[in-house]
Image (tube, rainbow, N blue to C red; front, side):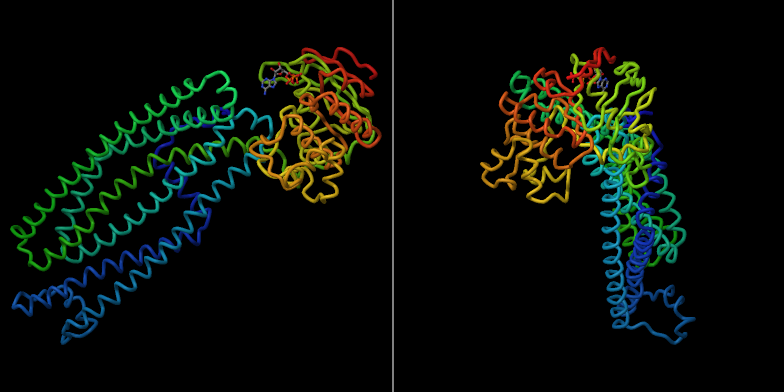
Length: 585
Ligand SMILES: Nc1ncnc2c1ncn2[C@@H]1O[C@H](COP(=O)(O)OP(=O)(O)OP(=O)(O)O)[C@@H](O)[C@H]1O
């Protein structure tokens, strides 16, 4: 499966999804997971014991009022405390407060550990995926829609957080159920067995509803992805959309997605709420039956019936909660599967990490040579058995009509794409995938579409050279003919450039991007149509800067502009992915 279709869910079973998420949580912090469960168990049992203490309390009160004395707890305690032991009210109350206090403390520790575990899990997921995307080969990531990656890193993570929290609550309910069942066993095994069988029947009866939850969860994944794509396309092209009055198309598209989601949600809610309604009615019937059987069949003492009822009344919301938490987990678990799949795809396409990469030749001293290099995007051959040479410290221009393969050749030079056949030699050494990251430390690239961060001028420059001084930045800005307009900005280097550099003109953005590349002092400078937004005067200024770079670094110009071509030492003309001619500039 490619990265492009990785968002499609593979339809793992719910329990497999639960297991995968549980394993991931454990891998985040085994110690915290174990401590959470230990405190959860201790807390649940403390709560149970505090309930059990109702028995001696009722026994005491009923004895005071001339009622029947229950023998179960005192019978249990007799071997430890002696037959003459008498329960007194103050003792019961003190023990009750002590048990409740201990239980509350356990619950507090459990809450702290579980919250930390939840936050750590979600943070780890996000950072792991982020790192995987950043390590993946450009050719693999470029095939993936940005909106989908954005969705996975934001919307899907929120759903995974909900699923994880629901799983925690499920475990919590499971432990409570076990603790309470144990307690009720101590009071009456027959009644406990009846309640357990009835509960199991109700749980099984609700299975079709849980199945609907899984279907709804998968639909939700697809529809939310559609919604993100529409919103992302709309925002990315807002200006163009407005200029064509195309807003209604996006509104209709978004509305369609939202209507489908609403329809799915309403269908699901109807089924789910039917389950809850049935459950409540069944619970009431069961309580009545329970009282009847306890009283009429087993002739159970009043105090025991009361304690059992209290236990089952407290169990009842836990039981409904179990169904709700399970539903919540089922609906949101597909997001975890989607995330894991995107991560797996990125990891499969991993580019060798910079530190571990084979060092590429240091810089470029003699020449960079293409030897019958071919590259295809799928079936489309974009570069066809091309051979040429970029002499070191000279200026080479690649020219040719649109779609001729120029930018693809630049990507091949940078090692962002690897040839399907042929070789690229740097000073005679073949460029390999493992060289990519270290080779790019010698390169600065200025793309066709200027990319500026929503940050200050200085922050934008420092992406290329984090340790650059203020003097270095001004020097690069002067070289790129950008110093004069930066001087006029209200906070000079510290002026924010707006979203994507919107506060600067197209030409100003290009010059900041060029300054950023020069700041890096690269061995190879690649300028892909980097003067297209400049007027004649600024183009001339930049050309004189490029001219001055001759002998200092290798420059590769990709251009249509005949004025730019004039400053090149060598001109390579390409068309249809082939080299038509090599000329001298
Ligand atoms: N990511 C891609 N996936 C599929 N085909 C692509 C991709 N990028 C480019 N192409 C195709 O490869 C061919 C070469 O594209 P390339 O961008 O290298 O041309 P170019 O000479 O730089 O064009 P321009 O001057 O218009 O920027 C074109 O036919 C283009 O449609």
